[in-house]
Image (cartoon, rainbow, N blue to C red; front, side):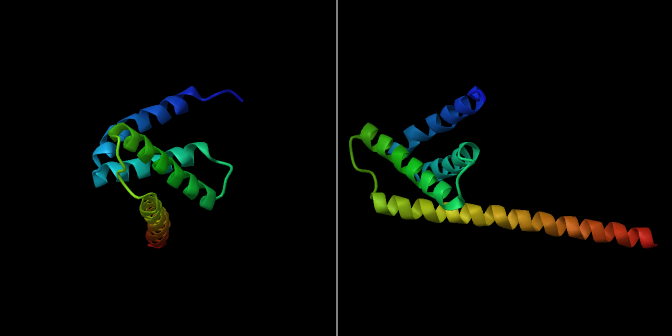
Length: 121
């Protein structure tokens, strides 16, 4: 099994824009960091359970914040608050993805029933 260089390039491309805005502290940048971390973990950590992936994403965002803090030369946020907020956002994103999947099943069911109804007439 070879190294998937396109995924690695995508990893660095995803992380680079996150680092500078996080030092400024805007919520949007933090949400982007969380979302990007979730995507990166989902793409690269395929052999772990959901709780381990969740923790890895929390750790990744914490690491990005540490880089931002070092760049800013100041403490930007409390680590426990970051972990709690990141965990909540991850849980919300997972819930949203699950809701989307359930809606897709519902739409498929509706379409099948409509086709069955049309074929009866």
